[in-house]
Length: 184
Image (cartoon, rainbow, N blue to C red):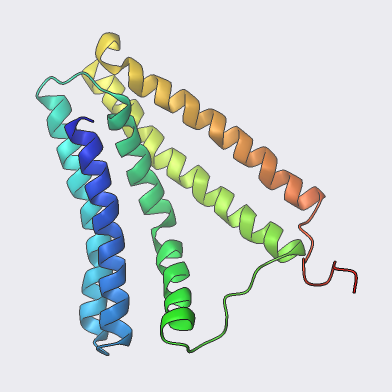
C-alpha cells in the first residue's frame, strides 16, 4: 500500500475519532463549545488529505487509484459529512446514553425520499470529487501519469448511474415495512 492509501485510512480513522470526541464532549462532558470544535476538525482532515495528495502529485508521482480514492473520500466527506454526524448523533443518544427516540427504520415513501436525498448527496460528492480529479488531470497534462484517475472517474460515474437506477426503483416499488408485512 502506498503513502496516499495509508493517508486515506488515517484520515478516515481521524474523521470518526473527531466525531466520537465531539459526541462524548457534547453529551458526557456537557461542553458544547468543545464538541463543535471537534466536529469542525472533520473538514480539516479533508484539507490535510487534499494537501498531501496534491503534494505527492506535485513532486512528480504517477497518480494511482489511491489518489483517485482520495478525491472520492473528500467529495463524499463534504457531501455527506453533516448527515453522517447527525446519523451518529441520534444513535449515540439512543444506544449509548439511552435517551431520545430509537432511530426509526424508514419504509414506503419516507424511505424513497430519504434515498432520493442520499442520491442528491452522491451527485454532490461526484461533482466535488470529480471536479478535483478533472482539475488534477488537466493540471498534470500527462495522460501516462493520470490514466488511473480517469479510470476512477469512469468507475465512479458507473456507480452513480447504478445508484440512480436503484434509487429510482425505490420510487416505483417502495420498500415495505417489515413489521406490518408479517403474517401473524
